[in-house]
Figure (cartoon, rainbow, N blue to C red):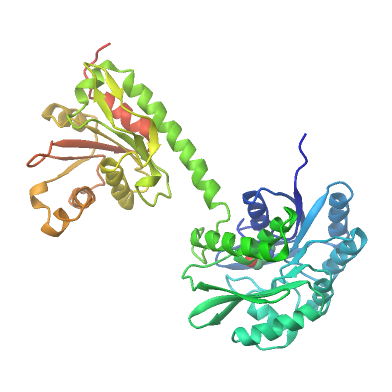
Length: 447
Ligand code: PXL
């Protein structure tokens, strides 16, 4: 049995699932490290604010720490929200008793959503004792100010505050979020001073601090040195911020698992398209539905950004002497035309992620109407010149046009073709199996 690389997250549990130990867990997982968890408090909160905080009793925190340390090999410890002096003391005792190394302290003080305090204001002195036991301490500019008494308005101030914090006993200090020159700067003091400068983002960053400090801890647990660990964490957190998500009506949250999340969806969507393709290929009658240009079956992941997030059949499906046959594999980015149609449709109805195109005939339209599908159409002759001259713009324009002129969001959109353009009928639906089953209802029964 392989040994797991374990790190420990000590902090508050957040009901958003996007900050506190939940964010730590996601970050550790994304970086390939197992997270043991010690909960200090339960923060009832959402993206709009903090409603309540329940602090766990000191002996419960001590017991959790004992349970973990008496059994599991912990290679790094990340400390987040602590709450009060009792809890800080329990953590200090454990760090001392277990002679822990690789300790990353995120000096959490307030929540981004509404500025609520997450630690009692008389805990600053106790927190400084934890800094002495830390490998890396990562306050934001506000927290650095509270801990050192130095006003942190720019990089110079932050550098002085970092020197003061290092004097408390930490091996390295990162002061996050220092505004200067229209940018956000992280001021890093280890053996020397480094600045990590980034563009100001417009999204919220609920969970960003948790993600950054646990990424440092995960990297230390994997054996990286302090400077490399901080660099990994900077890159990882930038990506989590770029992939921020809207969970509720308030502040947006960072997504440390964005890559895995997209992978999970891509796997599920590819399976759906493959299974829909098998159904289509096993129906002989379906060959009569296939236009000259071929048919494709596509499905997009819910958070699709472009055609690379839409699965389809490479080379499309052709009529091979009365038998529908796919040319290539199911793959992301395989379709350009139909993929763009689906991406446009998703702007109007995010649940219509799949499409299939079939031959446009009066009979097929009649059958679609009989099935109760909402049908709309567009006329390529009405396409504005600017759109016609722009590569890849026709289909999105056409779908947008057809949706806007329809009273309800259509399930099928057709156009009569144009010079050198075959007419086309596209059926939209929630997944590939669903649209293929609708299309097969148009096929004459055969074999
Ligand atoms: O992101 C700081 C933070 C840390 N820990 C808990 C939190 C928050 C912010 O809301 O709730 C438990």
